[in-house]
Image 1 (cartoon, rainbow, N blue to C red):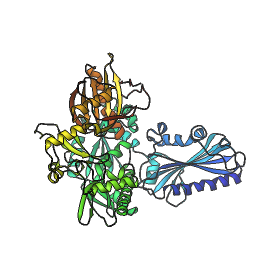
Image 2 (image 1 turned 180 degrees about the vertical axis):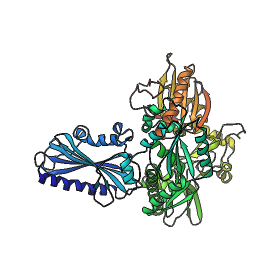
Image 3 (image 1 turned 45 degrees about the vertical axis):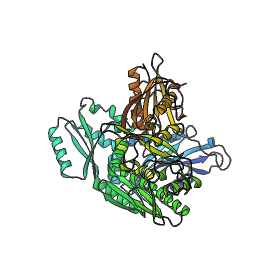
Image 4 (image 1 turned 90 degrees about the horizontal axis):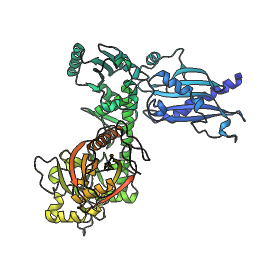
Length: 612
């Protein structure tokens, strides 16, 4: 390459910083980005191809896990000449030459280093489809890149003040047979020790008991099931020490202070209440639960600074959504007074308060059209037509049914409903695990606190039971079903649906669920796993198969959602002589955790789908 061409290339590489700045200007946690400098073989003009990557160094195994060390990150960047035209689609040159005429001359990879105020830059030069030179640098905001003479993870840690990854620190403490503690950054340290190291354990426990802000987070099955922790299963240092305990030690006060600092930089307020930091702007606020942030950061391999940046990014998105929600209400109801208490919003008009709106749920679903939002406001502001029967007409104006719901006792305070407002189908006895309650529902809204309605518009419990029986056909469930069969052809199905537990509230609904899950009427049992999960097993099915289906459902729910389902364990029997009721619609052929198509193996269970 001529000297003039090299000068031109250097100028184009500097333009990468401007592209990066435009990409990350308004972000608390900037994504990784790759900026490739391409040259056209026909017109010899330069062009830039910019790509951002989800996650944080989420570049290993095709993006399924984070990079575990500097060598793996370097290999990813160096291999970009192999991805060009083969993996990544590139636009054609402006001169009209096809994309294949573009060759890769150089690339810059940018990775934010939270807590340092700077970014790591990896610059690679290519020649004749091979790597010619690689160098690493530090890029402060708005400043030029200063390149390092030598590079290693230790040097990067010293230059930036924070580590590139925490995986190296984990390996160091694991290698110490008698126990070790390694600081990662202010407020965060990693520890590993065998259960037999009583002295280490005693010091460890004493430190935790003497400092309420110092918390220990162990490696749960949910954490180690994440692809980021695949290396741990093959770690040679643990082969002969299966009793080794791995713990992340984190100071909540430091994490809270870092969150408050980052929130202030975005113009947000932050106040701590125990283990919760409220990030707020005006009346819009969002709770950041420090234990949740720490557990998620442990699972993903984040440093404390990265945890704080990710938490503020999430909270900022939530606060902006709430502000838009409040604005939409005020535009549709001028003069409405909005009062926020905790995470519930109460809208009042002319001194009359409406129903509390759960701000953890209401603004974050599919954005409703203006007509649907108008319906929601009529419901929450209780603007029912004066002529209507509130048992048959929802305040939003839609037709209403009397519905049946099964709740676990732990859910009796859910959705802001007070237990004394619930209307029980049968008075529960102290030993019951679940209870049956009445609800009044339209196609969009459900009202559970019906005792005030019963006082203003009296009905006998007998008449409500009779009405609920007539309205069974209108109760709708959107199911995801995965069917399996034993050697005798008898079936078991894993079923997932919102509020699936309610389908066990009446024998006819139960019969409808069985028919939908097994593909026809059958004598079967329905074993609930949670409010959303159940196993439907045909009579005589192999018990081991049904148990593995139940285990698979819990495991896959945990992997997909990052938390185990809240258990609700009940068993119900159904037989074909009961007439089925309810609308059970299968929304996907693939069951929970499966990909499209039959024959997909569920991890660690050996189960194979028998669905056609």
